[in-house]
Length: 414
Image 1 (tube, helix red, strand yellow):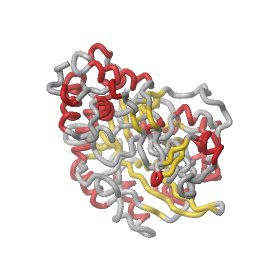
Image 2 (cartoon, one colour):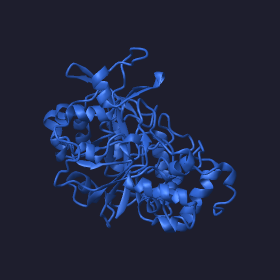
Image 3 (cartoon, one colour):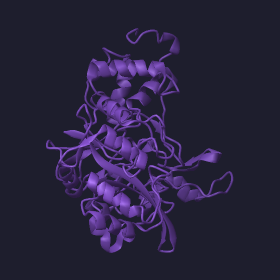
Image 4 (cartoon, helix red, strand yellow):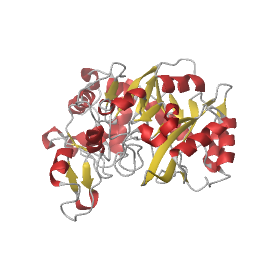
């Protein structure tokens, strides 16, 4: 089983870490347990130069680092346009078969737009027209609706999205094969929409830094041994050899429930239906979250599972768990890093720790309370305050379950 993350950014994308490098992405991927990455932002001139400097493409469209870590050509783009009397803003992940196609697409795009100002460029054209442009270059370019339910920029989002994929793509719908669930939804939420049975559900991180708590926080599992672009493309298009996803709990996402960040207002869908979609403090429009949006479009009950449903795991990044149990705010703090590295040293990768290692083994290396929290995370029993209007969800760890800072002398000092 190989874990892939194909929604990556480089340091030239807006709101992304300026310290990100190809090498740094690989180092975190190996620690995380990821087996293949997207290059991220391959249309951006400066990042394209770095990709070509640090990676070498083989005859199958896979790029390899000097230490033999694989990548696929990938970028994200943003489309802003009007359709059906409504302004639309939709993000897409693009996968590309080789360097030659990347250059051809870049040259085609440059006839109409700029691409040097942001790793995720904005184009003023419809989804249909852009898909046609992609296919004029290569039918092997894959266009995947990114974070499909996110309030802003999701194809099904509450702010500027559509009610169906077909409404967006019309007669070109047959060329869309997969959608990205995004952090505020999981496959179970998507299963409630019959139309989405026709699409593969993939999950990727949309990372804005190379830190392990961002990279691979969502990922997709493939049963692929022979690494070729075509093998990964067929898995995404058909579902064959696509084995499932690793998600974060939807409540962790920044747009799960309704709210207004400026006023500190957060509402569950039932409450919004009862009191309305305006902020009770300032009367401005609430940002309607993914949970409400799913309820609007769902025709199946909670718990429904299609016959062809792929399994998924739902876990919060390990650094978040350590920070919560030790009541530390900075995920990159010395204390968090020490404990994280001790776990990696003993158990190999973060995904192995989060998904597989027994509690008793974990408790031999870290405090039993942290070991137990990792198991709670795995079984979905960690209580959370849901995210809303751009605010991440928060773990609700009881004060008595936290470890007092005065007792944090050594990793093994229980």
